Image (cartoon, rainbow, N blue to C red; front, side, top):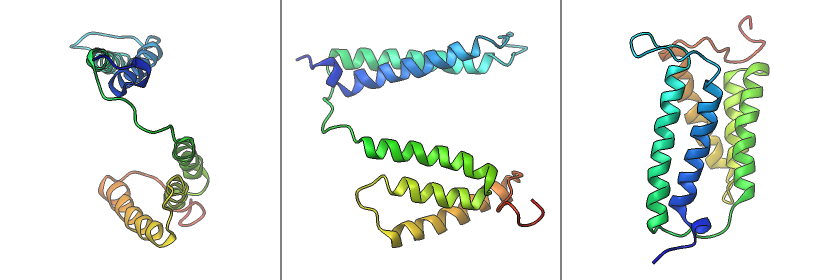
Length: 153
């Protein structure tokens, strides 16, 4: 039994992978490709984009043969707040520092859900900030200022 393709999870996921892979491949066309022995800056992005597009074709065909229908409706509030949290994180990294950017990102993204609870978000934020600082700043040695204006930054 064939399902409506515009209401088919696999078909839509395959289309999304094809679109993202196609955009990535197109953006990498400006860089020299090189060869397998001497890879140019365009080699890796084009190969990854091609693999993503091949996987997208596989998922799209699997969905066209019959797949699970999309249940429910689109949640535009979660989509908007998750996207906004990433943009705010990028802006806050430059202007506030690593720790405040993480705090703002967690609170904005948590507001996307319908079960926003202050206590849980505060605990999650504390745990994730400590883990991120430990991994990225001390473990990997990335040169991000923890807080802009503190410690000479």
